[in-house]
Length: 219
Image (cartoon, rainbow, N blue to C red; front, side):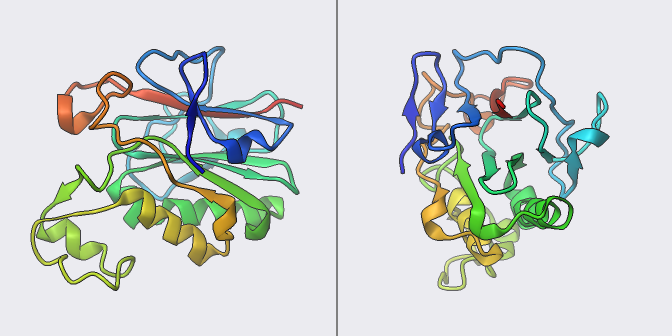
């Protein structure tokens, strides 16, 4: 399912729109978040933080909660923002997955923690990925490309300069975790290709220029 742009300047997922107790959005350069979202000091890790553990400046790359009214947010400018919703246990997560976080399997760690602590089943999780640098633009060298060999075993071009599809890599991780393909949305615009809508670190090299993507249980 492709994302669509709402009047407030957020891209939204029709998949997550189906959940009546949920509010979400993937930010653009025009959109600003209402309220005070919980956000982490993102460090390209595999660290998952429960909202009950959150403090200002807390480091990590995924936040989870089952509390209504807590807005979870991640900041991106080419990395993949991923929003999860467990439709059975009413648990949500916001994940920041750059290439390092993807290789660190931050997404798998998040699903594991949702299962261990909240009883989430992968079969009940909906996952939507937001705008990120696409395979059209994400060129990497030998050292990075070879690290993706396990996720792309069919590829034989990872031993030199090549391009990587980060959203597809995370889709495969979701499938490995047991999330059904029909529960995954990874069709989103490329941040580098659309300067009117998105910040892009690779394109602009602007420190601190980021979009917010957020998710919240409304009741």
